[in-house]
Image 1 (cartoon, rainbow, N blue to C red):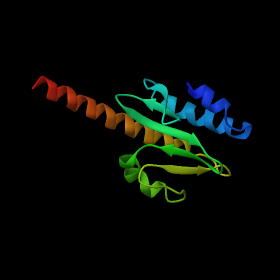
Image 2 (image 1 turned 90 degrees about the vertical axis):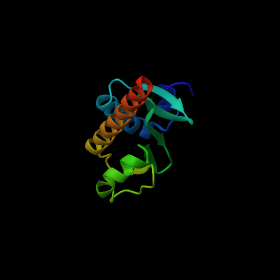
Image 3 (image 1 turned 30 degrees about the vertical axis):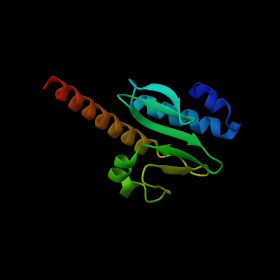
Amino acid sequence: MKTIDDYILATSPGGRQRLQSLRAQIKEAAPEAKEEIKWSMPTFVLHGNLVHFAAHKNHIGFYPGPSCIEIFKTELTEFNYSKGAVQFPHDREIPFDLVRRMVQCRVQQNLSKQLLKRSKKKQ
């Protein structure tokens, strides 16, 4: 698969709308991010990997990375989550407000890293 559109079209019809909705929320939270396929998953990139998502049999996996999982873990208690991923079961609504805030967190983290790199280069 070369694009996120290809990825979404290859999923089950029932999952397509959920993936499109998740994609739209990520785009809204990070409009400057570019879309790519990395590790066979839809990925948003802004000064490095921002977030990934993927369709699975029983859930949608959302991968904001370990730092965001740690920051938002008290809000993730009703979902299965691990060090860098959270599972949104197909039989439950995706918490889009939480997704947007996690994406915005990742944007700030990546921008901060980019600024730090730039300042080190100037020294």
